[in-house]
Image (cartoon, rainbow, N blue to C red; front, top):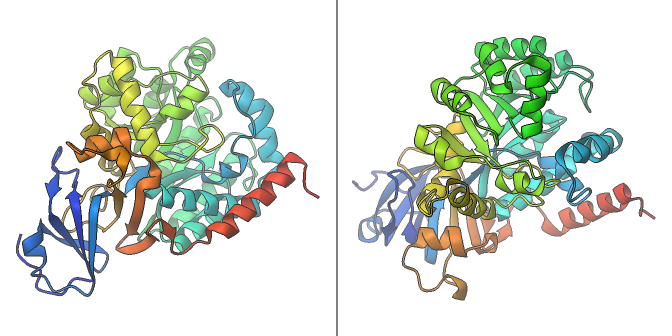
Length: 443
């Protein structure tokens, strides 16, 4: 491509550059140029070195990729990490998590837990995450300060929740926050009806109307377990997805989280309505919720993204590890070793996530004109050698400790594995203090 007419702010020179779009491509000895937070140049190293650049960064042995996109989580639940392990979903929720939330969740909890989650995600190569948790205004302030990118889904249930006395109150707060952040460069607001079994038709219809008026996404746990689907059939006489379709919620702005139960009719609905599915394999495995048929959905044309879910049911926010699990699980579920190959797995964790969140024109791939949301993975270690396909090594042989640098809109949030805006030791001490309080060991 032609040399930029104006000087670059930063020129990156990695060993490998994986744009994700076009699919399956790996560039060796290429450079990427950034100006004003955007990618303005991608080309061979020799051409790149002809560019004027305020800063040139050599990244030997590193793979430069789009930042990972964690398309579903509950950020502040990092403070409940490991609180109630090895339990079935409804027992875990009703007897442990909901009571703990009622007791502990306030603005301070959300502020500290969200900071902890943001730091963990940046260190793991995540440049954008979707959050669905209480006090979303507090979370938005933490996202703004940290420099990361996020979608904040306003949690809506038929009963009172921390920070919202009713569904109407939650919806009102959501509309207000949507208006306040409408022009924010990194934060997007979605509406988050919790699940079909916690939100009735009347509130779902209100959410549909408002989301349509605002052109806002809807983010919802759907078909998480066979029990959920069976219960819906017994009580309402239809599957949850069919009900959501009848109410008019399904569409390209609808983000269906989990989706472990997929009949032929369900799949036809997902395809026809152009919904995105957000797959959370490790949480689903840990809670024995079921298996999302990723390969079948992908081949049918459904956009499948990936999320970690909350740290209370995962127990980490490691999207690179999640992607590896997703690739391996997809093969077992499909009964095919060719299902979800490494390149498609990386696409699921980047561009597919951007599509699900409705921000694919801004991020998700390394293309000129897109925001410079980037991550550099160090593949020079012993455990990655020899390298035949760097994307395969990234997915199947690399852990998040290999994340060295991360930029969001061209700004460095991680330098040589160190956070630039957040204090790791302070966050660790804060999390330990919460742990002592919640466990009753505070002195």
